[in-house]
Structure formats: structure tokens, C-alpha cells
Length: 110
Length: 115
Image (cartoon, rainbow over all chains, first blue to last red; front, side, top):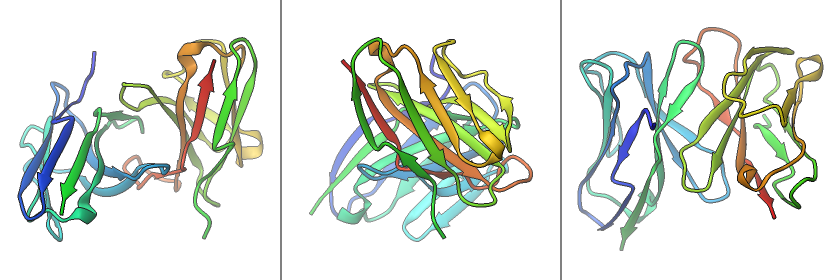
């Protein structure tokens, strides 16, 4: 049973379009983290959201944590080819464990 | 400052053989984690060290897996004997001492193929 459902699993769009990636769970997390992973490398932390309803922005990326701290979204505005990569969400439990989504493979075509 | 380093980066072994993966965390990071991703599945937690002590090993799949962290520095993860389903990428990560929620830094992973 996957505790953190991430969707879509794969997304291919044109440069300049907007997109949203979702992570949903029936479990409450103390925080929700978003990572980006490049081929041959480990995941790199983009942002951590902690408070229900929290919104964080990182340039063209907007991250939101649901009010109940069970779900989160990543919205990219005007996607660029440099945004291409694997995006992963991970829910943190207070015991240091991270529960991971399956990942969204994003391809931005020039 | 050096990041989390893992060795080997790739390993191909036969079923029944033994493989030992090594992880050197960032200097000063008391917390060390092992995660793995098998083909088609999400990344899953294996265990967590605080210094040399195993804080949480609830994710270790079975007794063929043994993790150690001698002296609270580097860590090894031994798989003996390896099975086909052990194939995947094994990530090591570390974080500074303190409360949960500190940024976790991942290594590049050790890709294991069991044939």
C-alpha cells in the first residue's frame, strides 16, 4: 500500500505551459518535502512545507501544503526546458522517516 | 565541503553473492539514513543511525541486510546472500544533529544489479 500517491507519473509539455503535480495521502505528516532528482544523482531538496495551508514560492515554482497536512501540490509557471527532471514528494514523520511518492517524470520540450 | 559519498556507484553480482555498500556522510552529521528504490517502486526507508546507534531499523526488509556504522562515521550496508529482488538503487543520506525536519542530504546512490 502506497501511503503517498503522486500524480501524474509522467508529464510532457511545451515550454511556456503551466503544470501542477499532486501528492495525496490519507495520513498526516509533520512536514512535506519536494525533491528534484537528476539522472545519476540523488534527490536534492527543493522546499519543505510545515504548516497546514502554507504556500512557498521558489522562482516559478509554487508549493502548497494542504490545510490538513495530508496533501501537497507543486505548480510550475511558464515551464522551461531546464525544469526537466524527476520530481519527488516525501512526507516526514516525527521519527525522521520519509515516506516517498513514486515521482513525476517531467519533460519540457523547447 | 564534500557531500555524501557512496561506493560503489554500480555493482553487478550473481544471486547468492555478497555485496557491501559504503556511505561516507557529510562531516559532523550525526544522522545517517539508508533508503532504497527498487524498479518501478517508490523510494523506501531502510534505517536511521544516530552516531553509531541504530535509531530505527523498521524498514530493513529481512535479515539478509546488515547495516553498521563503526565509530559513528561511515556506514556499510551488507546484503548476504543477495537475491534478484534486491536489485535497485540504494541511497545514503545524512543530516545535522538536532530535531527531525533538518535538511537531509543524499548521496548519488549505489546501483545494485543482482543477476
